[in-house]
Image (cartoon, rainbow, N blue to C red; front, side):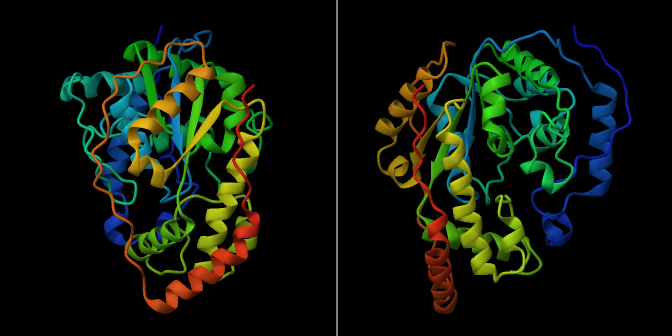
Length: 343
């Protein structure tokens, strides 16, 4: 049974992008952050460490600007499911409470999937990355932790499993989550979290690079500042040009996913972003069939299709386009085929 134990915490720190380099309009309000931290400390719950998820947990994941948010929104619409929205995400130390509060605020039978986002950021009842939950429970307080074994760092799988089990019990159906951080540790989730499955998405590297470049322009104080997910090769990329950093980020993460998906201890499938836009019905049927192969838990589809309003990003200045094209060509040697195990 859950119980409340106020405890001193620090606000989870973003280990993927440096908030100190963001434009002021994209920085969190420190007073607001302190309020939510204090509230979470007061409401913190502890799960039953012996519990097991009784419904699937589907993680939608992919490199930045590859269509991950759209994929997650699409899965929420297509499947009988529950997701962590922008209200529930505020309660990273009391996740079931957050889900319950969200249900009271939004009509659970008419989930509002807007299919809108700003560089992956959504609002209201739309799906949220639940970043603070993962940063806290996977102890991702430093960027290097992304590439270290969770076992060697002493992460207790029973705590993570217990929270996810409690969330699926409350939802009484499939839980769909954005797998931003979990996607670094897919074998660990396969081993320790029964019913966890991953859907990864890939996009045209040219369109993806353009979109990442525009995200840097929008979010960061300088185009040279790193934005979003770190690939394992980050040490090789830090001192390169922005265009080379972006190309290395795209292909480094694609290679990281490819190497995890070929392992037999990972339950995953993948989809092409452009194909999902062009033929969502067949793509979603295939995703659903692939995921069901990986879990014995019920994974039901209601068959609702997404609203397609996406367009390819407009070209950048010609000199930037040239540098991006050269960089993508240079780092394309890192790319590897995605061939998930069928075991």
